Image (cartoon, rainbow, N blue to C red; front, side, top):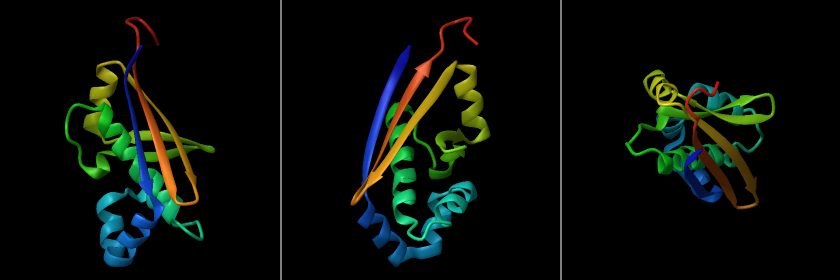
Length: 125
């Protein structure tokens, strides 16, 4: 059963300005090593970073408590983006039967993320 849906749209130019102003410090504060390794291998990392910021914000709209930037991040399973969580949050999600689904897109000036937070039915694997 779907418990919550969150969506967020990030302007890619805003991420470029953030990188120009704060550079490495902003990257290390907002993104995990896994996210940086993925985004920084692109000639223009701003769209990928914007999509990852959007994913963090979209998940936050589904979750009732505040989170630090690096408690939720985007990993890759093949070509498919997936949400990953810090150990404490991961244990809570699993313990309460939650699954998080993620879709990302970026085009020209914006990056979009949609998160669906699903709760498994009792007895479901």
